Length: 251
Image (cartoon, rainbow, N blue to C red; front, side, top):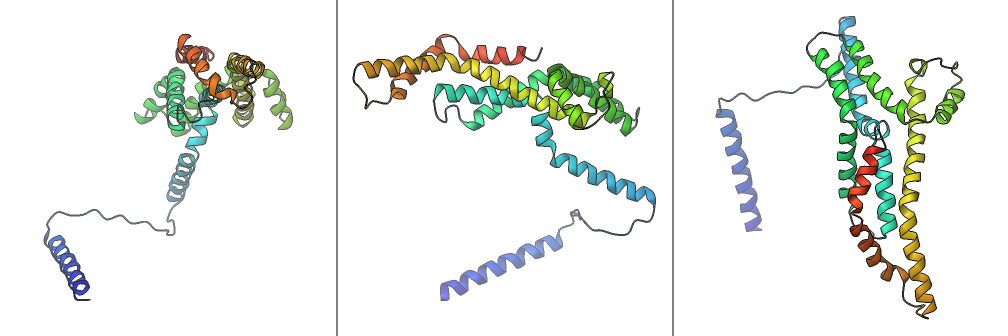
């Protein structure tokens, strides 16, 4: 009990000393205030709505990065590759996601550079307004999605949205283009994953048939086929081929 009392006393004295030192310090500390008040002019209301819109966009930023760029196709192919190799968690999820993210930045760099030159830099230099900057920023991203979207998927969402038949790509709303692009990317990713799966599936079948013919029914075929699949992947320089195929598939 005595030790506990001494401990509380020491903590209290330390807190008082810190408070006194802070009170005696001459360095000003910043003060942050958050509150909700009544707007005094329409301009303040517009500014508040812009801040709210920016916060909403930041919340949806991960989904925008995943679904409107090349990330979806890349991560699907890498997931199929690990499943075909049957290496469980090797490479780990962090490694696959990191590789997919950097490959996304690499494949999207021409689009991002165009958005920066045509929209962001002129807006930061006060040469164009915010609405014009948004229009210029969306245009190269729409061009990228149009190149990867199948006409069949685009026609499906135009029909489902009951929009008039577009005469030019500019007539297609962005909210129609994005879901069409997503399902096109899913189909392309699954097609590439299936092609990657075939050679590893053949190895599994050969090993399973060999073990069955030898009467070794209790030995899991995956235990024997795994080293052969890893050896095959190393001999063909698999990571080089996968990265090249993914990057060139967007050109």
